[in-house]
Image 1: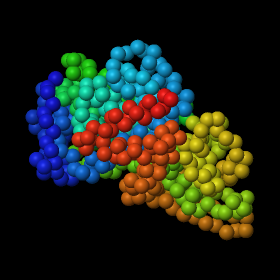
Image 2: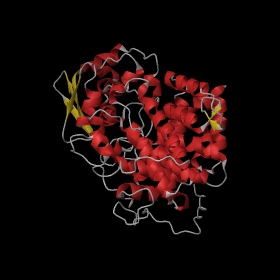
Image 3: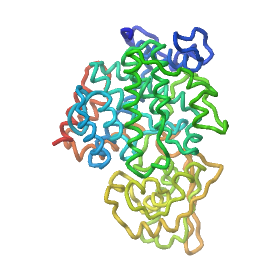
Image 4: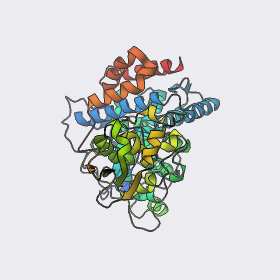
Length: 482
């Protein structure tokens, strides 16, 4: 393991909006032990993270991800999956100083497992759409857990998180829908790469060791779409975080793995997309993927959000709801596949998040689709269920992950329709800090009370040199135990 070079200050370095454009999959000089161009380019990028200056907008985007991550973790404190995984993590009796957000300390890998699962329990966390990956859940979980264990600064953690995010985005670029359609949860595939890359950056690994860590993360890729609507889905994010930490730690100790798995036509691609219809793209770090991240404003599967946006905008007065004869939700093919074929009458909050008919009905009834709307046990509202029974979901080639349309037909023959393109929270219609404050307060205030505003402000300035962010997260953890 090499010592990490000092990070240049903003005053010492010219910062622009491009990332080391000389790093690409076809650069010469592959690092020792990494003889493959794509893997070599990614490994060099990760190895260079500690010394790479971050533009202000990238730092802000990373902080937005962190604030969102803390919010959804806090809001999930009563979720059964979170409590079970935290209990098992504690029962491993690992020794470490990484914070378990629901109470206690553990070794970094165990803390990453517990906190990564917690972050995805509400299905309210961010998504990088091109990879269809909930990136922050595993990558911030791994970054914070390992950063605490080794005593890294907040500045180093911010840089490591960005390196992890960018790595996950490059490996998964353009493959998210293809992987999901073939039954794999993209977060369990590409989130592992991000968690491993962030962990490597924190440990200061040279490029050869990074290549082995990424190979280890790739060989553990997993998570099935068939588990959506169960506790296993958030577990995918936690396991990705844990495996990322372990992969980096093993590589740091000299563990060797296959280093050609991430190539175009390589073993990871061939395993996941066996028909050869889609390919891993050549790694191009010419722009910041994190600036194209999507933040959720509804606590349901991201694929439901365009239709929810449209339905909320069309929602009639309460007295007119019964006059709706039919509802047509026209969405992208993946949204139809994953969320459109459900019954409209879910038995649990976990199921409800993936039921587009039910989510559209909630929106038409003026509900915010907050975490409370999906709390267990799921409240049975007969009026909402009656509306959901009128919803038909159609795949429409005009729409994709971030777009859709809802049409209402009334008993008197009147029709109303509206498209959402892009839905709120996506690039082109992004979340602002005020939107994030409102989401944060709704999720955190029940636990933190009057401290909520102070916690938000400290997290928003994470990595500014004052070192208040980690202390704030520990204070919040103490409040969640009370």
